[in-house]
Amino acid sequence: MRQLDAHKDATGVLTMTKTTNLFRFALAALAGLALAACSTISGEKLAAAPSSASDAASAAPDYLIGPLDKLEIFVWRAPELSTNVTVRPDGRISTPLVEDMVAAGKTPSLLANDIEGALREFVKTPEVTVIVSDFSSTFDQQVRVLGEAQQPIALPYQAGMTTLDVMVAVGGLTEFAAGNRAVLIRGQGEDRQSYRLKLDDLLRKGNIAANVPVLPGDVILIPESVF
Image 1: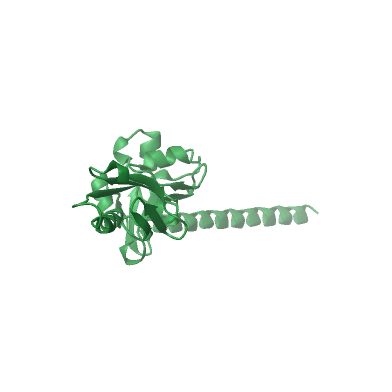
Image 2: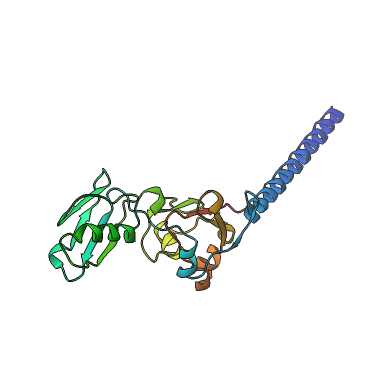
C-alpha cells in the first residue's frame, strides 16, 4: 500500500513538474512573440514618432472635405458673401451667389479656389478662405486606440491633438499595459509608417518629450505586458 502511495506521489510530482515546465515554456514563447511584434510590424522597423507638429503634418495626406463637415467660408471684403455651411449628405454646399457646388472630396484650398472662380462673375478678384470648423468624424478623421487602454475608443480628431490628449480621453493605461512598447500607425498601404510611443515615460514618469502630435487616421496600439 505504501509503495502504491509512493508511486502516486511520484506521478503527481512528475505531472506537476511537466505542467510547470510547459507553463514556463508558454510564457517564454509569448514573451518572444510580443518582443517580435513590438520590434516590427509587417517586417517594418519602428522609428521614433515625429516630435513636432510640422514633422507629423509632412507625413499626412491633405484633408479632404466630407459630408456633414461644417465649413467657415470667408470672402475678403465681402462679409455679405461670407457664411458658415454644413456639407450636405450629397457632398454639396450652397453659399450666397454659389449654388450646389461639390465640396466633398476636395481640400479646403481647392474648394476656396472653386468658389473664387464662381464668384468672379459677380465680384472683382475675390479672395476666399475655407476652414473646416467641425469634422464629420469619418474613419479618416478619427484617432483610434486599441489594446490596453482603460477605454479603447475612436476619438474625433481635433487640431493640435497629442498623445497626451488621446490618453486622457481614454482614461490612461491599464495595469497590464506595456506603454513603452506602444505603436502608432500612420497612413495606409505603401505610405504606412509605424512609430514607437513611450506612453509609460509620458504618463508615469512625466517625460513631456514623449508627448508627440497625432494626426487624423492615426491608430495607437497598446500591447499587454508579459510577466
